[in-house]
Image 1 (cartoon, rainbow, N blue to C red):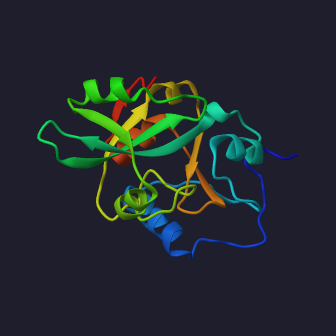
Image 2 (tube, one colour; image 1 turned 90 degrees about the vertical axis):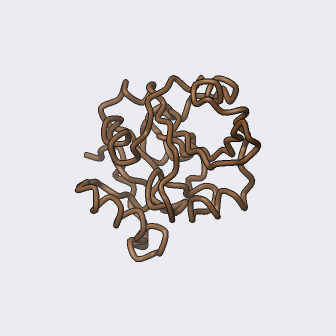
Length: 173
């Protein structure tokens, strides 16, 4: 009998540099997880949910923003949002004492995370990012997050995401 996440790929991506960075960070945090290598790219929460047989809300969608500080400088901000949620950028800015929160460019995403859009993981970045974790994810015993490649995801929990990212729990919408 198949279980959610029992998708099988023709290839193991654990040696791909981006996936290896995620796996290394998870090991550093003593996380033992299930990684799924999917036959098709899952660049959206909806696509990941369909491939895994779960609801989009059970996907921890890694969204990268440019947080503009009051002095005009910019900092990267990672928002781990439940896949069914829209992020209220004004709300996040106010809660984090930022002047604004704007969508990051693809170039910023790559520079700040080391990943291409569609495979951005919550961990494994060149330097740790200020992170927000959507409290909606706490409704689920298991959530799935990108593992550094558009064909890979890993199993985790809300509490584990908070711990491994040093994230701040916030209602994002």
